[in-house]
Length: 541
Image 1 (tube, rainbow, N blue to C red):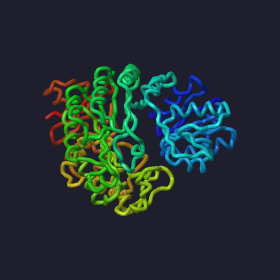
Image 2 (cartoon, helix red, strand yellow; image 1 turned 120 degrees about the vertical axis):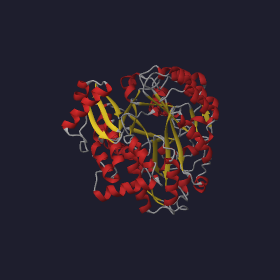
Image 3 (cartoon, rainbow, N blue to C red; image 1 turned 30 degrees about the vertical axis):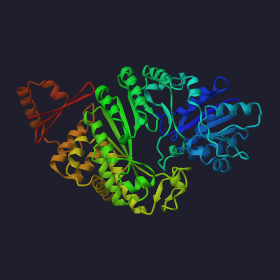
Image 4 (tube, helix red, strand yellow; image 1 turned 90 degrees about the horizontal axis):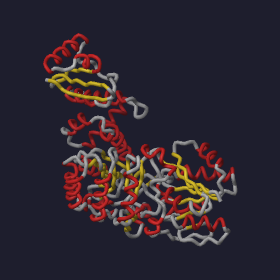
């Protein structure tokens, strides 16, 4: 029976490892293929595309970001092709399979890992056999079984990482990789806390797969391991292989728990890592101990701080730090303190997320105890709790929007670092900037880059910041941009300045006249040359 394995990703650059694993586990024995869509694709297009393939079975990988779309697609498919068999799998359906079987127009749910269950289910369907497979549920056959596949079996399959179907877009998309499954921690808001044990793929398998990846055209490799550094020997083995075999332009991204990052790993990175090759995502979530205890997230913030500072000291790694707003016991003021504690590291990115009450998690089960009101549809984001009112949550969203625009975007590095040097609270700076935005009616979407700079300039209203904004703005382009600010030199003054610069510093006169923007600033003259799609910036006294 012709079978399609599919999902809806957030963006085209994302890829689904689960689809590829099910494919390599099935295609030798079954007529299967996989295809990905995005949540931006029209549902009508997806439906027509699937029907055009004339599939008898369609399997969806389900997550909080796509489950609502999948529900509609399933209903539309059943309406157009009533006999089509629909299977759902993935973390969104694993822990409440009965809900989806009763409320969605589907036939089966696979709970947990599918590399064994999925081909077994296809075989049973094709042979009209009774279905009694660990992890497979359907109406009349609902249990709490969650499939767990031996990693040795996964290692016996063809590589899911370098498939012919992916070759044309390898350099344009993120490749997701796993070196382990499971999580050693029990964070009550996370689905990983429901998994039992931590399992590692073998060294020989990992090196074989990494060799293929390093030799491919892929640029970004993101490890799916919940805690890459859970075993120091394992982590160093992988890092050592990557350092010796990576290709220019590649970056490898990992999720780590910083407070338990072994010093051996830190030293190994410091001594051996090429700059820019690694990106670490560190989930701090809160710096308030009662909050961490409530969600069973044991964290030594003092040690975490030491580790983050060590990782940032030599600039070898890009750091992405995470906070979660809405955890138990953390009031508005205390969350602002957590924000300021974490922002003080001045990491390249600080992601401010909002708690999601995921199906199956302990925190969702205890929602009434903490006074949670949350969205009943995915992504189940919290609306309020005992410590945060809806107004508080709205205000945090205001700060989060400004954080994304003016810090995480990386477009205001000079300006924002100078501004933050003078702030008592980074959180309240972003909040007050957001309030200014709302009062002025500035665009929050559909804006041009020059407008972002202009908005911040009007808020700051200081000459030294104005000059830094000019430098930040001009550094964003590879060709001469339009100016959002008033020129600092008249055309005649510009000619005279260029003449002086040529004589004093032996610069190329034609280069300056044809390709340069020249502005007068406090330190002297800012000269930005745009040639051959390159930007070169200097300040001359």
